[in-house]
Length: 295
Ligand code: PMP
Image (tube, rainbow, N blue to C red; front, side):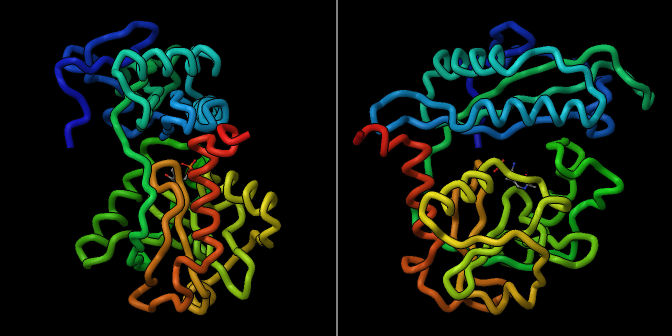
């Protein structure tokens, strides 16, 4: 996939720079040790035709919290970064886009603290997913990182080696995605998305503590509240998941996407009749501000 071409620009510490000409420091502690934080954000063309970054404040606030968790100097406030993002989207002529801010370290081959950091914001086109495609998921042989080894609630680059290994394993075995357990063997999350499953008219999702508490997960909980869908947060086993009626992943990139099976065990409920499908619709209405356009 081509993320940029000769016209693409990005935001680099207050400057608009051509992506093909941007330079950085190859002695960065981030490149060598995975010590960086980032966000995955989306913008959508709304029903009224405007460009809107979905949950922009929540994402940039999380970026700030992630940097703080890793003791990284954080140079810009949320408002500045949101304005910069809208500028980059406009200059790149994008409405439906993926937005990737990264805060990373200067040259430093030691493990010591830094007195400054670099910030970039990149964007590329990403069409919304309205489809019916369902995922074949496998239980990964990899577990999520030990929360006593990492600040698991921070979106840190180094954590994603775990996601890459789990995702590659799942694809090599003919599955679409991996589901990882936590260090106690309870279901935790996907490689880049949170999980909900449905049983007897209610939804269940792993509690915070061993997961990245997603902004989409919070939006799904918000939708459950609006639609009076009962939902419980707790610790659940693979056996409980296998006995569920349906399941879905949710995340900024994944949006809301249903599952066909876990470890080749098919879920019995037709996706169209599940709570997940209802939530998928409500989620797409929210990101495209459909309700507002009708009001
Ligand atoms: N878990 C992991 C491991 C992720 O990488 C992501 C994507 N950021 C999520 C969950 C979902 O988070 P969000 O809804 O904030 O995108």
